[in-house]
Length: 83
Image (tube, rainbow, N blue to C red):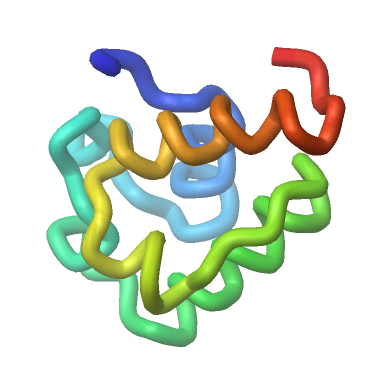
C-alpha cells in the first residue's frame, strides 16, 4: 500500500503538529518522534473517530504509516465503516 489513510494524516497534522513533509508511508511513530503517550492518544483518537480498536504498543509503535493504514482498511470492513 502506498497511500496513507486520510484520518491518520489529519490527526498527525492537527493534533500532534507533525510537519506534512515528515508524513510518508514509510514513516513510523518513532521517526515522527511520537512517544508512548502520544501513540496511546493517537490510538484513542482512531478508536473514537473510526470505531477501530488498535493496540497502541503492538501495532502502532513499530509499524509504518502504510502498515497502520493497511490495518485500518482491513478492520473498517469488519466493523462496517465505509472506506
